[in-house]
Image (tube, rainbow, N blue to C red; front, side, top):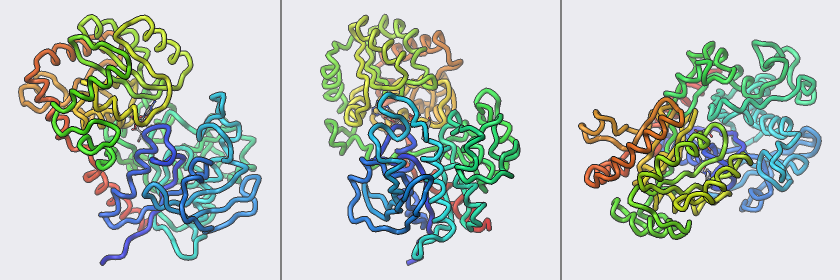
Length: 478
Ligand code: ADP
Ligand code: GLC
């Protein structure tokens, strides 16, 4: 048997152990996806209390007496089917709350050093700190891992570096006065380095000191180079265009399988959704009308465009549609959605985070709405496809790459899997909802769309091959 090549993924979350969004799903799925391509991908994550509690058979792989203000241990462990390196540093991670926020929903004030520490240990591993395991490739995810690239440079680590941008809206900014405390070199504090308008940007550091950059869909790769979507880093992206690839996210087909999912009434054809639909409506206390039962599973943030959906909602309700929403985040949006649920009989809202309910929603809904202003890839529309719920999505980022629109061409060719709209405004969304209802009323063509959707290839095969090719190239960088 051919020997496995070694790579280390570095991220702030990882499903099924700790998840706030799609980043965790992707980081959790990549190791299994890359294994058939000869790569043994271990994952380095912070030792949050909930994660430490789930480790089995861990041993100390490395220690550091002072890691940004306290002692730390690097634990080698297995959990959730993953091969992990867990950074156990109680002064940084032993707290209640989410990976990023305290119990009042505010960023932890020392997030800069919490994730600098993660990057530091990643660089140490890349530089050979573990006697029995040396990665050829370091795969950094989002700003939380970005500083690892600088530390690697400082430590002379040989591993090739790949920076994956899951969302360029989050830069990981901190004050210039923190440079020395974060052990960053003075020479790097320049416009060509990690300086960003007088501050330090961890994401920019990762973009500049990595050998290759990837993002999570081909369309977002194009968008990143524009002022509209680049969020102030489009110039950096343009300067590194030759190093950039767009590789679409996949879905873990074992976890997201409607035929075997223990959270739902399993089904293999669209017809089998009926029991789940009835159950979902009952769970939200709704009497669905004649129109489609639509679902939203989402973080409530500006990105996701759910304020637009509030404005467009009457168009859906007037056509007999109904809506169930599961989400949390922005307090004002949470309140606005609670009000909508009070105001309309056919709108149900759950504020919170509930993995099991999310599965029941994909299984029971006729359609899943994703009206994002920007969407690097998006996973909810992929889960929707897989569970025979028709995605209605904004024409942006990965939403543009994963849904075949039910426009005239798509319908005539019999290949449509969803509805797309553009521009991303409330009137355009209202128009798309109206169209969705019209499509829903033609049961034959709706059934065909559902079958197309459930057959769509949303697994990791094609994308894993592309990552493996990138890793291969990186392994020989230095
Ligand atoms: P993002 O990462 O920007 O939030 P994605 O579509 O890539 O968007 O991934 C979102 C992931 O988080 C999906 O797995 C989705 O099902 C899940 N999710 C989002 N909000 C909730 C929630 N309130 N409860 C359960 N799962 C959620
Ligand atoms: C980010 C993006 C989302 C993407 C996910 C995983 O959270 O907002 O579009 O699917 O990362 O890559």
